[in-house]
Amino acid sequence: MEVRDALSLGRQALSGKTEHFARDVALLLAHALGCTVEDVYLHPERVVTPQEYDAYLYFLKRRINKEPVAYILGYKEFMGKKFKVDKRVLIPRPETEILVETALKIMADMEIKDGIICDVCCGSGAVGLSLMGWGRFSCFFRYPKGAGEPSPSFVLTDISQEALEVARENARNLGLDCQDGLRFLHGDCLEPLRGAGLFNQVDLIVSNPPYIPSGEIEHLDDEIKNFEPILALDGGACGTRFINTLIEEAPDFLKSGGHLLIEIG
Image 1 (tube, rainbow, N blue to C red):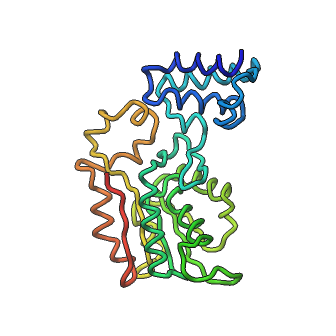
Image 2: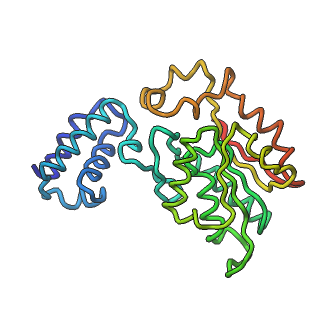
Image 3: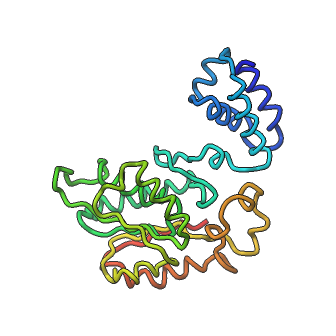
């Protein structure tokens, strides 16, 4: 079987079963072949080996059963980087990049040289680690980044130990785990900051907390409610449990002039 035939087979299998079936097929075939999506389209004549074909069929079966593509691939691209994801963490959404971009602008405007930035409900670490990577090494900051220059400290928190394990692995994969000033704290919402004694010390708190009302969980798409962690979705009866806590308690930890950024909906 050639790549062109495998693409056709996959499209037939997923047509009507997923919203972006052609895109999904190309991603899954590329994953099975160990190549890029571009290579799939550039070399339709490539022969698919029996082992590659078996892997491809396995991936297609998982997708037919509504498993998210990101979990099948094992990663999700976010802010130009690949973040490991699996069923322990929520899949980062493209719209969450707006939260990161807004935070980066605030960090630049405040010229945070040696402050503390917290990512509460960090999940895979996509938000906090993106801030750490871009904030330290990009033009978002006005001050130079020479050797020995002060840099912000980053604190990533989550109620799920399993999510923190994924976040730590992403830090290693991105080469950020060897940087000074990166901590992972376990606990519910702002409790880890309380336990660490960070009262009136934090410059910026960012959070993409659970915000879906409990009663709406069962009405979500199958690929969300059957695969992504409910803990990262369920925001309580009205969907505002964590949002209210953040708004009410964040001032205890923020410095004068500090900021709280929350993704809502």
